[in-house]
Structure formats: C-alpha cells, structure tokens
Image (cartoon, rainbow, N blue to C red; front, side):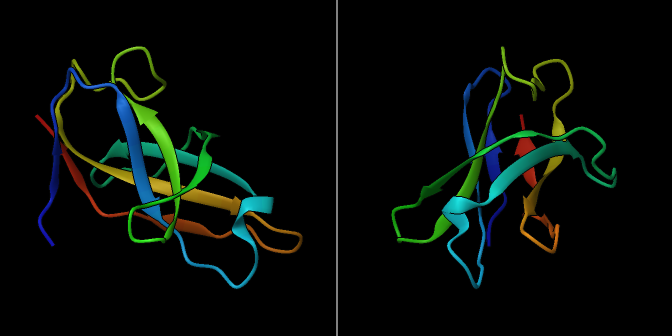
Length: 100
C-alpha cells in the first residue's frame, strides 16, 4: 500500500479502518495523530463513518484550525485510534501518512 500524502495546508478528515465484533457506532472513539516513532499522549473525540468500500472508519480532522495542525511541522505522522467498550480499551495504530 502506498503512503497517503496530505499537503500541510489541507483541512480534511483522516480516516482509519476499524474492525470489531460489535456495533462500533455505539462505542466512544478517540484519535491521536503524532510524529512517526512517538506514542500518543493527547486524544480527541473522533467520529464513526463508513468509507466507499463499506468499511467502518474512525475519522478526525487534520490541518489548520484543528487539534492536529502540522502546517509548521510536515513529515511522517501516524494516526492512532482508541475505542472504549464496556470491558476493554483497544488502541490501534493506523498506517503512516506523509504531510508535505
């Protein structure tokens, strides 16, 4: 899979596919987007959606005016997803992206 590129000036939703055994839309989802090699420490509320292939995705806005504004620090970033269920809190690492 090719790494996705996003211009540093863009303001758009960054999707991450999430698979689960239960109805994910009823669960709390948060995301973090950090530099490659860094573990997430700040989480923001994310949204559930469905992509064009019918897969469930978590998504969060990136770009100027968002919690994840990389306009001054382009480079390789990694999205993380945290889902809260009744008895678990799985943390999932997404595919790296390139901010140009």
